[in-house]
Length: 337
Image (tube, rainbow, N blue to C red; front, side, top):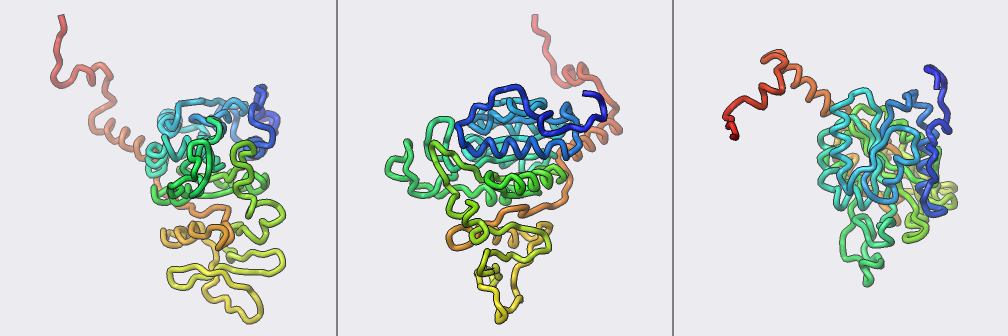
């Protein structure tokens, strides 16, 4: 394609047959990503998608960009190395609740705290889909699956709490039944300088059908979800308007009418530096509360690769550029005969 030619969605669609189960939420996520890519103004040769193992990890095959299909849970190591090696790339890591939070949990934790400039999309369908329906780290207690026939005994991982505990600089949540919202969140993620972590609530029609239908289907989402917008109060409800209020360290929901005071009604601020504030937002869980979606946190802090490159330049100024052979031969050496 000639330089300067405008790209569209089709330019980011590869020639590979998309092999997900009919009705899988991955199709909607793929479509949203392909739709938003032209708006970013980044040439395809500077975009890379990297994945681990799982249904979501087929993603690089379906994007007409560069990509790596790596090993189980280790995609964070690959994206970190790639970011250090090439500062000009837009790097996207695609993972799932099993790949990212089980075998890859330790790797995911460290990439979040290091803060390289990458975008992480974690598809959360609360099940192991590729291996045919075992419970995953995010499955709800009591979940009956092939590997938990009497019900899961484990407390599920909340991906947002995990990311926040790892000091992620950008944390967001979106959902596969709303392409417009996904595209908006993905744009915010790309705009952020640092590691962007996005949980995507996703349906698995075969092994865990409609895990979020109680709050994210079109029929109920206005009453059961809050779309976070900076500067806007946490208000929800299609007919009966309600708001989320702070009472001490607790959150409560109240109906909004002429008798309701707006004092302590929470107004969202994703740049709030307080861990306590964003932590309270993650406590909003269905059915006691509506489920928040959007950008929870965005904080500016130095990226890992920028600090590393600064160290390299400092070392060069102090000791010169050096040679690899000198490095190998320094210190104690032995000659093998």
